[in-house]
Amino acid sequence: MKTRLAAILLSLSTLFSFGHGGVELGPNKGRILEFSKNETMHGEVTVRDGNFHIALLDKDMQRVAFTSQTLTATGGPRDKQAKLEVTKVADGFAVSAVKDGEWLIVQFRPDSKGKAVTARLHYDTGNCDDCSKQEWLCECKPEPAKDAKKK
Image 1 (cartoon, rainbow, N blue to C red):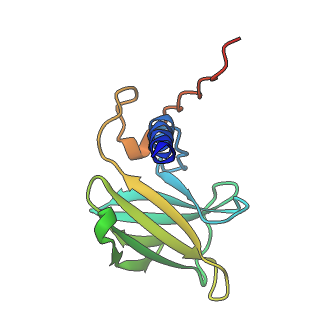
Image 2 (image 1 turned 45 degrees about the vertical axis):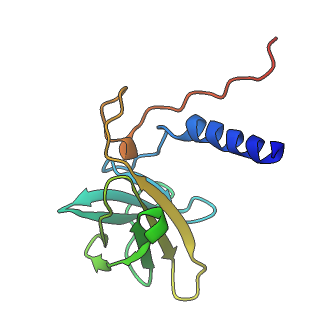
């Protein structure tokens, strides 16, 4: 019982420590998702015409030409995730938008033989109290963790 209680308290403290702000924004002020293990490929997520638009960017945040890259997406409430429609457009991928408070989960493959990289985005459209931007685009830095030991 003590172990379970400790795990719950740790989970809650982690949620409150890292739940807000500090996301990286791209050149179009969209949310950056990591599409590689070594930060050489990124996806910039913006909203256009009620859909997510995901542009591919390199390590220098410059647009990447589309060749054989693929993207699959799921989203919706945690207990009822569904596959989302993904289409290639001239300058990226278009993905059906999820509702406020739901998760967007994408799997990016650099080519047909490449290993998929999974990225997640919590789509929270509530406004941040500090910067007044939507939470999923909030640039506020997270508060540093408090040191447990007092000096």
